[in-house]
Amino acid sequence: MSPQRLSHIPPSFLITLPQGLLELDIADRIYVDPDTTTRFSTDFGRLTRAPPSAVLYPSSPDDIAALVRFSYFSLHPFTVAARGCGHSVRGQALAPGGVVVDMPSLGRGRDDRINVSRGDGSSFWYVDVGGEQLWIDVLHETLKHGLAPRSWTDYLHLTVGGTLSNAGVSGQAFRHGPQISNVYELEVVTGKGEMMICSHNENPALFYGVLGGLGQLGIITRARIAVEPAPERVRWARLIYTDFVSFTRDQELLISMSEEGFDYVEGSLLMMDHSLIGNWRSSFFSDRDWEKVKLLASQFGAIYCLEGAVYYELATASSVDQKLDSFLKQLSFVPGFAFAKDVSYMAFLDRVHDGEMKLRSMGLWDVPHPWLNIFVPKSRIRDFEIGVFKGILKPNNSMGPVLIYPLKKNKWDEKMSAVIPDEEIFYSIGLLRSAIMGDWEHLDDQNDEILRFCHREGIEYKQYLPHYTAQTDWMKHFGLKWNVFVDLKRRYDPKLVLSPGHRIFTSSLIEHVSEQEILFLKLY
Image (cartoon, rainbow, N blue to C red; front, top):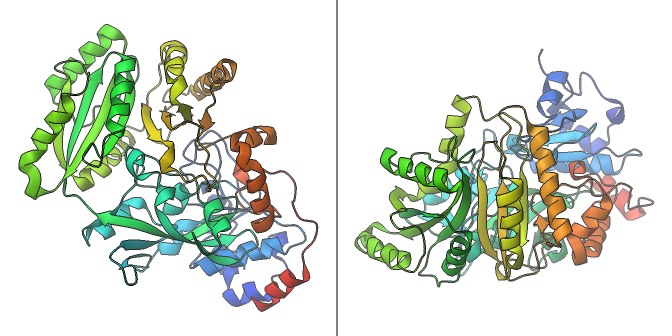
């Protein structure tokens, strides 16, 4: 069955199109056939299903603005959700009964959506990127200029707008902050259908609100991102621990070092019954080294891996071994369990994609992903380890990594919508598990058990990529930022048009449309 456009089957809410939409011919870019809406009815998590009424394939940001503007001025506004790769896990990118915007359509057939430039009258460089662009494509383009963004996510096949709407964290965040801390400017379509440019100085309330704002205040159609000279090579190390205290102490030591220290620090829990299954090995270990790691894991049941990287240029290759050795002498990993390899900068940053390809070939990628991501304050990480890693997760038999690594509060801008624990150092915990045996409900129940444990023990965690079903929980999540967030929502999306999948707001924040806004509609 071929896609059916609105010009052929107009839904009830588009029977009387405003003149602006007719001039943009947006109706020819909206599809309502079941084949199309079904494809946009679920996400990477595969835990929920909610088909939209229609899907917009925009050719420009103006198409998105026209759609949102039409909804805002309708007697019965419909919801709109921007979808990049659909990598949310709890339906955050869905629009039940509304319209999903297929963001990748913005860049199809165009080569002008990633542009590297130098700041006027200065030496700093930046890259202007369409919100629909993948970070891997940004990397490819900036490397042509010998440059690259400073902060990443572990997985690069995500859209710029998607990660900036959350935060964007990885092992570089302790040094450079999350991705949202490395943005100079945004172009945003608000919930009123206004196209606005915002930055630290221009419309700053919108700028800070959108970064980490979960798509509630605007759809990011362009971002100006900081870049720096890209290294050529990476000395990549994995260190094995049997003692959690030593593991976290060494992580915290590494993130406290100066610019001459590690450039990337992460860590993970390896449990013989699940985490060593599948792709964690990748191509990093030799067969002999892998057998050593498995034997140690079988002896202790659970071990920990500290992962670090040192960036360098080919011209300084002769000194990188000495530099790495000087770091390792300060650490307390199990003797004989330090492993290192040398890779290109591109291969290191895109390391997770290799794992994806292997899982796809085995039919283990498109399965339910009941993920749980939380930030835990440093003061309670030991309690979390005892109660969760050695308690709740002990009988687990699912496949997927469990990430553990420290971040620094002073690298986050408090004016942004993203929320973190109120301690200078906190840990990012990612339970990135896959339900390969159809047992996702069990894993979901286990996630709830983990959160109940935190509540019971008074661990002041914050969810990352949050999912709540009650507004009271959202209020607690945002804490002191809640009132500011509500005010911004009232200002930029009062009719709750945008991102309904989070279910943060349940009733309109506006009573009427002003005469000025009606004039705006007539003009545009």
